[in-house]
Amino acid sequence: MQNYYGSGKLLLSGEYYVLDGALALALPTKHGQRLRVSYAPSEHKVLHWKSYDDKGQLWFEARFDIDSFELLDNYLSQKSLTLQKILRKARQLASGFLKGKEYVLVETFLEFPLLWGLGSSSTLIFNVAKWAGIDPYELLFKTVGGSGYDVACAEATQPILYEKTEGGPQVQIADFNPPFKRNIYFVYLGKKQSSAEGIEHYRALAAGGKADFVAQLTKITQDLLRTQTLAEFDTLIEQHETLIASSLQLTRVKELYFADFWGQVKSLGAWGGDFVLVTSQRSREETRHYFANKGYDVFLSYGEMIKEGTETLAA
Image 1: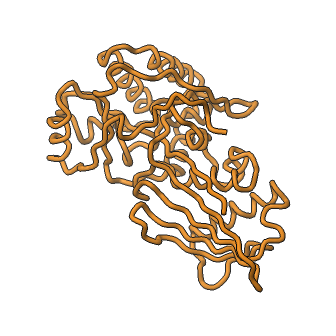
Image 2: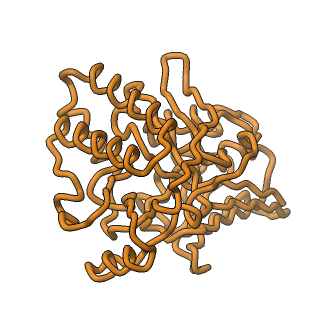
Image 3: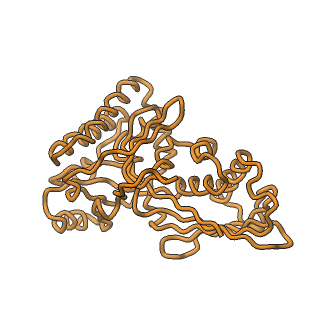
């Protein structure tokens, strides 16, 4: 039996423009996804895939021929076709992947609700790559695409700086341990966003002046690492939100839903859904009640959501 694990992700700074080289501050979450593989002799060469949600309920199942990764039975769906693409690319990158195996049972276990947008796909890519013994970034870029920061978070144990360069992804440990982190919370908006659609919108609107925005967002990321007060942090994330909103013709989430909130609200990743970061100088209970009264009940502290270990990146 083999076991693999990838952490979930949140992108604190650099969203969208991380695709074109902006330095991003990314946060691995305490909730991730586990992949377990077991082997058995069989007359038929079958890869049996079963995925379980955070409640232990089976939410996806498929069976593949091990030699060709053709789908067996009636498991055809967009999810099964995407998984087939990932498995076939893994075989191309590692020709010996699953060769000579008979019955293979793969089980994945999410630690967060599927709709939270914390990286069910990126943790899957990372775990499959580790299982196949290949570069997870190469597998990502040649299948579902994206910037790669989410794969970097999958193997991180604390906040990281991520930069996509011509020479490949650059990842380093971020010295981000703000003294005011007790004033930072994460609220789930309940509107699952498509990263692919967000990227498409970015590509359509961000043609002009991209280098300037990359430079400005990179500076904000660097400044975030030096903040010592909540007031400084609030100013920087407001600047960040304003830059993204103006460049992509989007409305800030605070203006849309929380105009009367006393702290700051920042989108994370694809705008308009999933989680937002909020800051508050008031008590946790008063802050939580504000969002609960508006119908947002998923309210997590920084310590409940983010990995803060002092370890180096996982091997």
